[in-house]
Length: 163
Image (tube, rainbow, N blue to C red):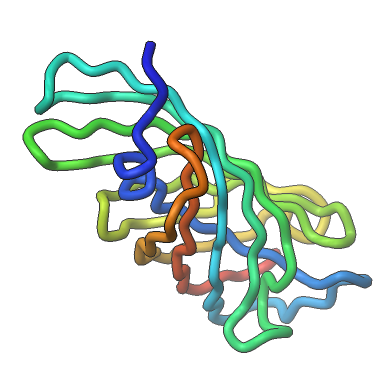
């Protein structure tokens, strides 16, 4: 397997996730969220030819709300995903866990293309147990420091409701 191209992964790493503060986290029972999900990661790819590539990746992120102090501000995330680029069309999907300052976590599922896609909360612990979360993300690119690493900041927005 050859290392994954940062350009391919950067255009695929579309997912976002949300977080909350540095002290005890107080979150309204429901409302909108708007966050920047900034991440770095590495991956592997297999190429059938120049027009067909598939692979997997791992990424780590920090999440900040717009404006600061909003829902899911200052959380951390770990994601694993898969992607494919065939005839110039990229698709990706995966899962991320997000943890807040209290240690409460939730699991997100994402899917989309190199422009954006959908996110959904599917499980949680602590305050996030039973939470519903639906949203979308818009992909953003950043330069890379090496051929084996990618960086990006995606914008996530949507709504959530705690149990």
